[in-house]
Amino acid sequence: MASHYEMFPAVVTHVEQLTPLIKRFTFKRQDGQNFPRFSGGSHIIVKMNEQLSNAYSLMSCTQDLSTYQVCVRKDVEGKGGSVFMHDQCNEGCEIQISEPKNLFPLAETGNKHILIAGGIGITPFLPQMDELAARGADFELHYAYRSPEHAALLDELKQKHAEHVFSYVDSEGCTLNLDQLISSQPKGTHVYVCGPKSMIDAVIDCCNKHRYRDEYIHWEQFASTVPEDGEAFTVVLAKSNQEIEVQSNQTILQAIETLNIDVECLCREGVCGTCETAILEGEADHFDQYLSDAEKASQKSMMICVSRAKGKKLILDL
Image (cartoon, rainbow, N blue to C red; front, side):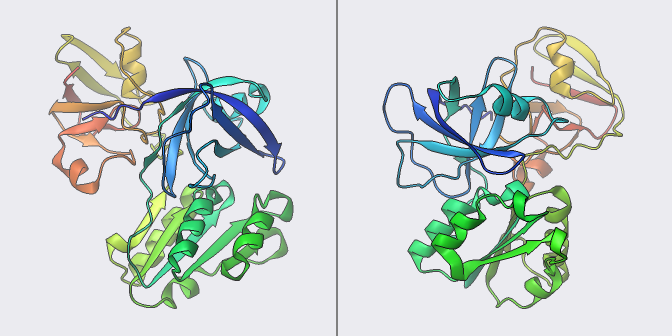
């Protein structure tokens, strides 16, 4: 059931503007202790205040636990967290940092590893490339971005892993040929992608076209993929003995919060698992990234911050 994160009081020690829209933040624990260990692909929840918290990929060195680092892309059309980080989270700012969780780990084995990043999706690959290099693994990073001024961290990547980095600049007419890249890899290659939904979908489709097995395709996306044209449905809260209508433009969590029922939820993006709720009756339309395909198919639980009902009614253990 629900995943509970240990939270650590932290302070922002450094803020760096990497591109017009991307800042890098460095955090230290307020008690002076090291942060927990993590592996490449891990994320943390940054809780800015009682209303705002977001999931961000860790991009710092896995061997230096004195600090954590994340990159934040400012999105004025988002939920407000990235705008808060850019406009109000300065050096000395006190926030809450969760322990790390990894929903995007590297495969332990594989003949080769192909990492495909778009824009801010580059961040989880920094520690992963260090891990692959330490293993002596065969790997490549293919990094696509709009223009040179939006190429966050490219210089750092090339300094450390020059022979493994391939970049593609849209504004210069240099685009990534996914079909050529995916089709030319040896058997046993793992493909990882992080970036915009359109890129993730294209990579998955291309891998499926060339008959990659599911366990060789890995992706991460924090932005919600819930369709905007969903239908309204009814939710019955068994423990609370209440019934509520969830509107087409509303999540189950948002509807429940209007009843002043306290439900733990950190990310509100289907990533952290804290709002996992048991399904007593009905079927969920799953949009989270936390549950496995098998867990989603079992219809035993759902993430109420993003997932919806397949039918007209759900009964939940709340």
